[in-house]
Image 1 (tube, rainbow, N blue to C red):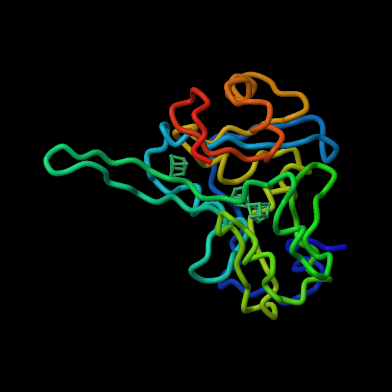
Image 2 (tube, rainbow, N blue to C red):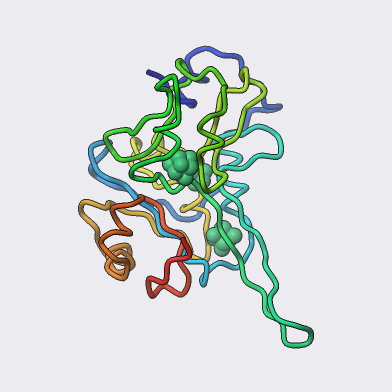
Length: 218
Ligand code: SF4
Ligand code: SF4
Ligand code: SF4
């Protein structure tokens, strides 16, 4: 079994200009327990400044195909001039439980990792795209560079295994992305989780909320 990052690491030619893969960061967080935990992320769009550093950090980290991003930030203007306001919406794979993409995949390529993270085994993916059609969040896309195999956010499992938080979390200066262990929540992450209902916390590992009071946008 190889997820996308392992698939590429294990010998496929992956050319990216100068190949710089280092994500600039001012904050480094470390977790002691690796791989066996249940991981999750909360995005509080009320904190989001719309800087899109998360999108850039993810792009540098994952090298998604041109014009595709594992996470997206979109500005939305509401109201009527002059009484308008601007807010930001976040899109990302929710790592659903159960995951519609996993159920729809006819080759068994889409699967749930023991951490709860939904991944795609690129050795099994034939690019049929059933998972893309099944995803209610438009989180998956084809990678034309690799026979249309499907790609999406993997919650930076490689970084988690190195004791690092996901690149988008580390590079969010507004702290709008809060990461932690679902099975052993601590600190601010625990506070955010407690504001969600139990059904919400079991239905997915990633939540997009507004205001920090647990008002889920999902
Ligand atoms: S880095 Fe943080 S503040 Fe900036 S757009 Fe992404 S979520 Fe919003
Ligand atoms: S958001 Fe889409 S890609 Fe992610 S787990 Fe759910 S159905 Fe699958
Ligand atoms: S968790 Fe990793 S792969 Fe997912 S959006 Fe953030 S940086 Fe990209």
